[in-house]
Image (cartoon, rainbow, N blue to C red; front, side, top):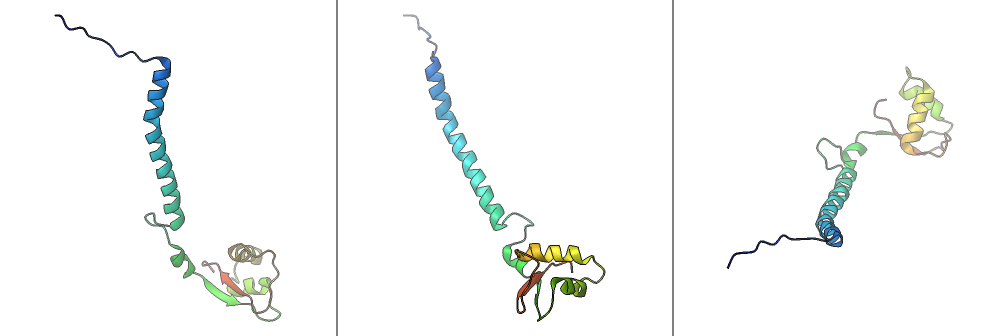
Length: 113
């Protein structure tokens, strides 16, 4: 009796199901890598990245004296720089709502000053 060769014939619906089943694990792996990469970047675990503890030790801190303004502080810590630039960096670094400071307020100073 001669052997009969049959070809596998998939309908359009069968191809869609087969492709979907093959794509689900690939999508799951891509999602896992994307989420893990975001967590690693947020934690600073990539090579050469500074951790939160490393960054926190870089800053010097100053306590605002009675009657002292950010302009006076800027002129003291960076006499050769434009005080407006120094003030903008201090406000940004400390996430201050305005340029107004209070006596006794502790501020981080940018590392370059």
